[in-house]
Image (cartoon, rainbow, N blue to C red; front, side, top):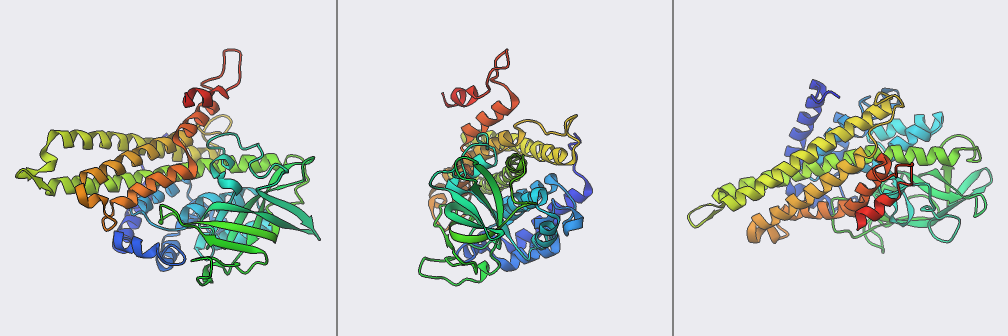
Length: 441
């Protein structure tokens, strides 16, 4: 592994940071999250058109920049530093990789260039708030998290050469505005149970007006589809509830999903996507923690108590030094996870082309803990003003709390990483499932 960044990677960071410093201050963030979309569409268009942000990790053949997971993680670190509300994670780290991995040639050519250029946004729809499970970050994803042939989840059935989806899902990232929905649904009934991915096109979603159900509630131009923006603690990470009532959909990939190994390919693609998403989210958390720590250090240098800056007190210095160490450790882990994900995608990570087992989950766990610690101390060290809505400290604190709910919790991320690495396997090759019990205890 070469730990040094290339000049191109430095330029990505530098250009993105300069743009976000000008266009995405705390006041701009607070204004953007209160729009029906939940983000600044003009800024997103500039990020996509000028910098190619959603297409960083997509091949040039599909309109992407042709970079990899490392460049995407570096971009996410800068967006995390600004606490940018955007569909970047949902589009570039969830929807696009799945379409690239499983989509047919026609689906790739029809969807990926538009996603890479920002004309369309996408997201992954997983029922029951099981996103972390579906991505194999907190446990194996070969279970019945998509419905399992019983009531609940999202069910798919073939109709007249196509498919119809029925069910609902909550906590869908950017689900109220995404034009391309990659939906995980159960099909085959109880006897032939399997989970497949389907594509729902909802291109008129972002044009919906506020309805009776609140901002972002609309049928998205698709019969039977109702999308409602949910009220969440972290407004910069917009989420939605989707209700599907016989919604027409297209199977992601070739054939009708009957081929042997179709479900195995889906679970493998979801797990690979989870590695990239975890690395991107870890880098984003590191960026947010870095910004929160920098603001806190600047504050304690100016805030005076007993005739001297509070930053001169040894107790405050020790607290900030501890945070700095945790932040740098989390940054190193996030960079390594991104490199490992990129190497695995390129087939250069090892003899079998696989990345370091559990690296992404461990990096995400460490980054989330670092952000939580930094955000909490930022609120405390800012004193009374740190507890107010007017100050930006609460943006980082909410991001820390909600990210762990999205792809955590931390102890399960570590348990899953231990299972993947075989740390709790017996000498005779016993089951690694003991990891969860050991960590929980």
